[in-house]
Length: 434
Ligand code: UGA
Image (cartoon, rainbow, N blue to C red; front, side, top):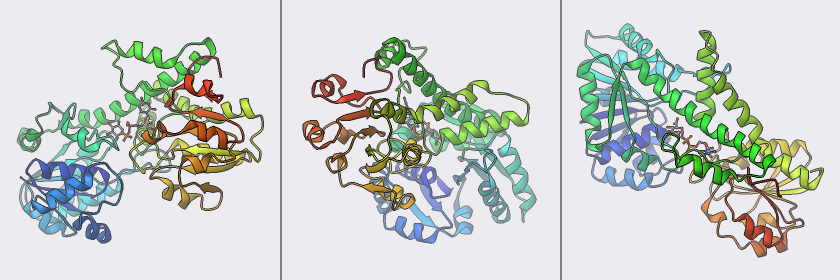
């Protein structure tokens, strides 16, 4: 089928590449010509495992193309996917102005029946709003349907998430449109759930809120573990064996970040507030998360006393491994707080350093690897669980540090081994011992 994806950002590009891979003819449209020029050459403007290979392969097969010509791309398409950003506005609500802008444009260009699917994360009721907006901008008297088709991809594993999706959600008022969308996704062989549009829109927010709550729950439990000498890793493993609970997203750490969880939880809270629905649990999940991000600093101060003028080494800056994304990354809050405490910071991340350098060109020093970052430092905080941190020569690290302190914010390392080596090691929720 001919598909037009509007917005060649993270969601649009991954979705477009995967749809092309299963045999559809996909045109990804964007207003950023520089981005389109590099995409045409198979160059991806952000880091996502396997995406570049997939795009290059499908460029060669002519299953994917990039264009700024919306007129022609829409004209040829059966399905139009809207995948533009919906960032937080100043008051926490989702800013859907880009989706609205696209809708106006689609309205003015439609000349035959199309299914228009909203992939962007949008508040309940947006599909209906967008339908009205397209209608008021129509230049010809043609039919169309607006459906909700939220995405559930995770950064860093987006391609495999798309091919192994737990579910594909299609929210539609029209069975004709739902059938077209179903046909598009059929080659993936994944379960499809048909719902009404508003329910589909909420499934996305409810899912992200539930996952984030699961993380805050386990982090709060980790805090209790430290006070009563339990190990959160064992507690989570035991809980996860109950199939009603499930083991995923029960990894204690220094909190969730990224461009989705914080933004979506705030937007749902705001939407609830507007209609008198309190969402106490979601509120608490966010509050627990804010406190959690400061935990490594609390732990460092317990060991080192003041942090004034102490050199602290940060390992990992991205909000999670396998991505260079630093949006709402706990690392940024930790850097801010360390600077307030008067600490000196040296940081290392395999791929996210350039982005952090742009924010802190002078106040943070960047190292070429973990070894360089450890030299003369009085504490290491592991912020992101990059695989390469597992295979470090910790004898070398210990010898080069001024104080052998490791705060393992992701419970990544073997604490017994490190303690035996003489490190002052503290993970998250792993008993009362340091
Ligand atoms: C999240 C959802 O998982 C996706 O399903 C959704 O499509 C996406 O948001 C979105 O709305 O676009 P993502 O933000 O890419 O995906 O990353 P996750 O893997 O969910 O991780 C989010 C944060 O939670 C990270 O900071 C991670 O370190 C943290 N996390 C995750 C934990 O602290 N513990 C866990 O057990 C799992």
